[in-house]
Length: 465
Ligand code: AMP
Ligand code: ZN
Image (tube, rainbow, N blue to C red; front, top):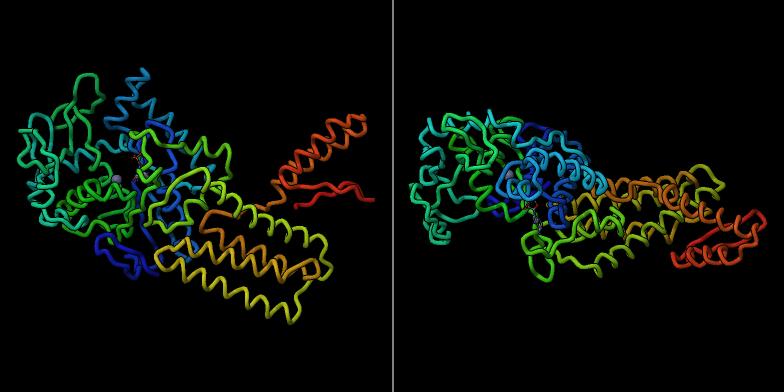
């Protein structure tokens, strides 16, 4: 299995530190607002990476943090006249709601920065003791020049970084590239007691500290959106490696942006769509498929038109699954025969191809294409004359390949049939009551969803057109 490592800018064979186990850290959200489709891509992508690693038999320890103390949190809490803690609690709750709805598996641990203050303080003290950090009036800065590898992730040396950096007029820093690992309290800000006075942690130190406490000195995969490569991840490396002298993360993965009209979707540009609002109109499967239909290192453009065309594609898949489910009712033969056995062997070729694609740096775009090819093949060759065993095999293969992508996991009939059945019953009642207008309205409503009703001797049947 190969993973593109941002550190080497190459695809590398993935060999975890401990055989059969993977430790993974993903930079999570700052919990001051609902998360948007751009953030969601990062979460969905790394949820998919984790699911696929599990599918391939690895035991994955998956950590994704909540940044629950920083400037944005403080600003928003002040605006809402609530405490930063209340704000964090609220949006962590909202995060779980949306993430669960998006079928994102819960992390092994979601640590909150504010739960690790004590450990962060001792991390900072350690950096000072090792002469990698210095205190000025209650602030503590990391001395970037002291860390030889500074710039290695983003492929720049410190002089280039300095030239490219905005001039920082903070006179107290020894070097403009130095960054805060501890910030002294400003009036009205939440703060904790520390050897340097009241203050709070800088953003970068929280990830270094939580990764260390939960996963140890060296982790297998460290991931986040591509905007975090510099400076966030570069700073994490500097803090962690100068403290332990060991490699911090062995594989660095970065997912590309979701754009709107070729600009990054972001809260500050106000061009964002929250997951909450998009989920009102589109199934989680559609949103996940939209995100995974591009390779995770390629930027994708968000538009309602694209979501609609993804929905149409998803409907085709769902229709085929619905058909299979209804064949199962009508099938008379239980077990597969010789020719069906051969056919199953053919179908397994799709699984082989799917694994090849996913093993190649999680090529979800091609893996989805393989699922479409598989379903096309099944559409042609499986029908109500097929054996139940074959139909069940097809259904379970589709579900298996959808699993790592977090899609196609539920029986289509269970969801849809319930709703349709209720409407049919309502229509039957309306007809009994001679309320022809309502009966016609229900029929038209179903027709809009491409469902037609047939009155048969056995009662009302429905089918998709
Ligand atoms: P934030 O809440 O801004 O700290 O972001 C949480 C995660 O979402 C980080 O890993 C970011 O890199 C990622 N992210 C933010 N905006 C986008 C975007 N437009 N496309 C993809 N990922 C994003
Ligand atoms: Zn981080």
